[in-house]
Length: 452
Image 1 (cartoon, rainbow, N blue to C red):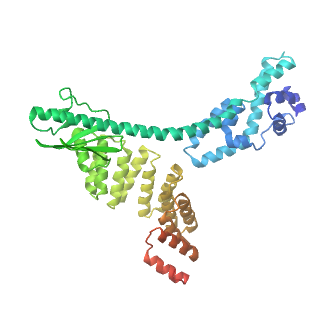
Image 2: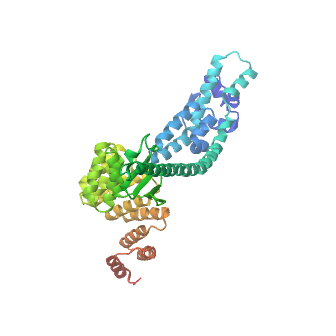
Image 3: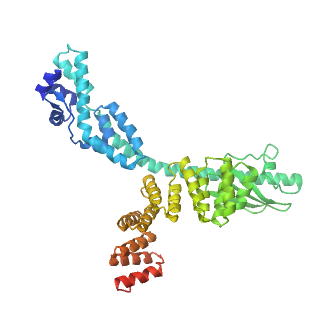
């Protein structure tokens, strides 16, 4: 190798040895494959550190520009799951050659810039511009420690913030009770509007994010409710003699009616009231509220998704697909919209589109058992029961108590005439409380020649 370098570029093995420093012998043996007859030529080799730790290895070997490229590609690959594996393989195959070209370029530049260096100074300079960054080896340790710290701190911080949101709502409700007492002294009746209690006169000021409203009021009593929009508790008081009652933050239509009365441009209030209507089967009212939310905020992806789901429940699948598509256009990683659109396509018999949407959900969230189940069902309808079984099995790896996955895997085993496996899955589904269709059980009994 030294002879070839000297013929072409006045480079020697010693130059590379000084530049590489750590594990120089190993790299020199590989570098010989890239210089044949004095001409550089790429050859496929394998580099495990570049494969597993591409970005970190490049930092470690002072390949800063390549490290930046690897980092940028890594960010892009987060959006494309299959692309990520391909890139790591590329780094593994090309890592040695990239390092060879980098080392050669740096050595030549140093020799060109400083042709009169004596050998000892040249060796020192090569070690300085080459070698390794020892600190880069500690980055994985730092990442692990930081991950542990985040795993501990974030839940505690979230709990702290939740307590602070709830405390703000409770404090504001307490102050509202004081304002009600002052209003009674002045007017011999309690106030039916929180707006008239706020301000300097009664001294009530609501914290940011807190909603307090008067549900009812008379000369004898008042009923007030308070909550923070980011909290998880709702506080209710039946005054003047009742205590404050804390409940989980669940809402009624009346809650959102009041919110809309206070702020008629509150898109979230219309959306959330629509969810309550939809849950209660009042689909037309739900669609009206989702539509109002979208008039206020045309980029409200969840409103499109939930209006689409309501159309789906009404059997209007084309309108549902249109709304799911709008949600996806606004948020390309809206997993629920892809899942719901896949269901709508499946109901219309457009199985390839359904499979495509379920696959997108899996790209976004690889541990989404419902996406695997639904894709398996679509494959089953296409007669591709091997793929269906694979998806049901994956769903069960994620959720071992997913009864629907056992039931549908049993059906696919039945169609493959794997009756023992079909019975095993049927029994497992039944043990989890799933009611297996009697018609399927009869067909399985007849085909397998056994009762259970």
